[in-house]
Image (cartoon, rainbow, N blue to C red; front, side):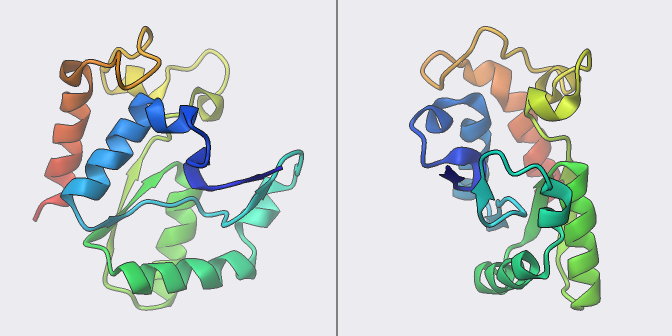
Length: 149
């Protein structure tokens, strides 16, 4: 199977609190939201090697130059490290902000999820229609502060 960044080709991905946050960012700021991997194959286990492929960096640079974002927000340390290197080696004047990836899968067993770490209770919210603005707004306010000059 082939996926798109954030699995946005799937209806369920567009109805999560995570999507609500990324949608807010893209509607309020000139930011760049992407995965490092431009294409993903189910069952492909060499993700780290695939992440660092020159092929993906070329596409990533083209996207950054096209979008010309105010800043880049990364969800995850691998993304931050890769983009920091890419921005530095290509002399791009773009600030990068690192945020913990919201996925429980990336946090490891027994660790708090991203939303728990920032104090947003989304345990009972599975879709935007059930999610409370009150629970998501503290995080959106935090993002606005780090993005705005």
